[in-house]
Structures are given as structure tokens and as C-alpha cells.
Length: 457
Image 1 (cartoon, rainbow, N blue to C red):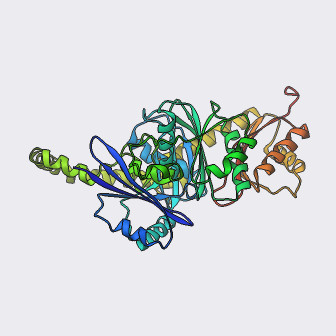
Image 2: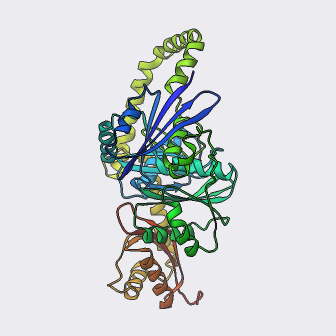
Image 3: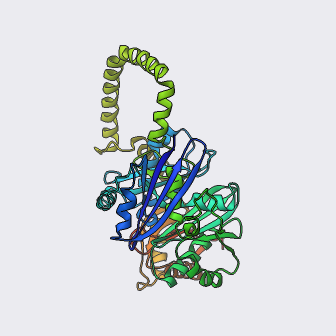
């Protein structure tokens, strides 16, 4: 039984829709349409049939994200740890936001890609879609969905860089043997700013190979400028032949509609990791049609098994639930007395971070190091002029090394800070890393410095 899929991308100037058909053995895109807001064709497509699956996109620059490393791969433990760990790195709160994650490769090893969006943004997106007659089953972060299009075009185990120049934003990602190893996003800007940002993104990601695939609605316009900005890259446009089974009438539009093509693939359940779906744990979700077919075939056996499980679970449920409640209450009282806070979010992560911080302070007090944190800050303050708009919101000191996280007006300002600190002679090394466009405005970056001592000099 075929399932009919509708994927919707709502942009600032247009609405892109993809209509696809999925079965257990095949997936085919039947229609790609990019229409202006207010077009009657949007309502006609949405109302043309009863959809088995409807997905909508969340803009790449609408989410705060990080690549995170954990010493375990169990999904249950990751589901508990990802949210608090991500909250410590982004300017959003779990209380007001929704987080989601997935592994960076299909083998479920290595880093995970975690993202967070404000609940208010999801509510606003639902209202916009409702006005179009669309009631989505899932929201998918477009930065993760569009990556599948480039991975299929390059080959599942290829090493390459993907640059998607969409009508409403930019996605730049590096893959090494099919595994996502770096990701940057930015909102829609003028051509000059977009080219400059893409150049910075590629340089800071330090891709393993020179091959680069470019696509999206603005690719043809910006490609000449990108060739001049990054002469060392081997720039290739996406091939004319779509790597997905697609109807002949829709094929010419696919290279300009990469975002909604990726959303349709995600709805079809044929996307490798990472795929970040808000409101779920990021895993592939079985469609309603597929679940119905399986239930019809295995219904009698499933019913008997479910009945036995319910009987077995009901015997000890009350006793276990009562004991669990008592243990949770005792654990929270102990946590509150130690941490002096009422929040129950990420208790274990916060306690481990607190222990690590205290142990580090103890070691610093024992070793001395000859340099104080105030000395490092004073040296930086006297080196960086006041007119250079740079703010730091995190400072950690492990003599003779210090790490700072901050925000600047532009990428050029970050380079200026690095050059001034290196030229001052007060630091043995100055390294800038993780430079990226901020969620709101400006540029976020991390700075690692080593204090110059007699030995290092």
C-alpha cells in the first residue's frame, strides 16, 4: 500500500512543496513546486488528497546547535544527557525550547548533532502552516534534511563539502567518508555577505578534501563569486540528474528546491543520520500507513502478546511505582541540599560538571602556576582596544592555558583580536576556533591562549 507524502518549506518570499509516494520498496517524488505566498495553487495542492504523512521544515538559522561527544551510545542515556549538555553551550533554555538530536553517521558512532529551537518559534510556524491548510505531523530541521541530497549526489561514503545556497539561508557541511564532521548555518543575506560567510565557514571547518558540491536556489548567481573567494576548492554544481527517483516533470526543479527535496526524503524514511526532528528523539518514525499494514498482518499475535504483557506488568506495577516515587523524592532532597537549587533538569550532568570544576580549582591552588586569572584578563584588556567590539561570556583558566568564549561584530573583528594578542608578546600562542554566525547577530567564537612564561619564551 502506497503512502502519499506532503513536504512543506515556508520561506520569506515563497512556499515550496513536494509531493511524494512511498512504499516498502520504493520512493518517488511526483511534484516539486515553488510558489509565491498567496498563490491559489498552494491550497489546491494541499487539499488535493488526504495525506498519510505531512512534514514541515524549520529554517537552518532558527536553531542553535552543536556537535557533542559522549562516552556512551545508548539512546536512552543520550536522550537524558543531550538536552542539558546542549543547554550549557547555547543561549537558550530547556524550559522555553525544544531539543532534538541524532548521530552524525548511520553506524551510530562518534559525535551527535544536537539542536534546540524556542517553543515560540514552533508555535508561530504552526500558525503560519495552519493558515495554508497544513497540519504537519513532524517538524524537521532543514539543515539536517538537506544534507541527504548532497550525500546521495556525492556518494554515501564520500569525503566532500556541501554548500547549499537556499533562498532563505545557507548550509555548509563537511563529510569525511560519509560522516558529518562539521556544520555551519546562516540566514539570508545580500550576495556579498553570503559569499563572505561561506568563505569563512569553509576555512573554519577545515574540510578533509577539496571537493565541494554547490546547490540551492541561489547557487547559479553566487557561484562565480565563490570561485574567486575560494580558489583552492574544487567547486561542482549538483548534477542535472536527481539522485532520487523523480517524475520527469519535476526533475528540472530539483537543484533549486534542495530543501523541500530533503524534507520529502526525510518523510519517506530513507534518510541516513543525522536527521533532527523536533518533538521526537531524532529516530526514524514509522508512518501511519506502514504501521497499519503491519498491524493487519500480525494483529492476532500482537493482541495476545499485549494481553499477556499487560497482565504481567499489572502484578507489580503498584509496588514498583510506589518505591520509585520514594527513591526519587529522597534523591531530589539530597540533590537540593548539595546544589542549592530547585531545578530538576540535568541533575547528574550538573553534579559531574560541579565536581570537575572543584577538582580543577583544587589542582590550580596546589600548583600555583605563577600566573593569576586576573593577570591574563588584564593583559588582554590592555591589548585589545576599546573600539573593537568584543565581549566574552566564558573564561576558564588552567595555567598556563586559558580558554574564552565570546561574541564579536564580524569575522574580521575576530581576526583582529587574534592578530593583536599574537603581536603583544604576552602570550606564547593564540588560537581561534569554532567561529560561526550567532543565532541572533554577530559572530560567536572560542579563543585559546597560552600565557608566555620564561620557559615558553
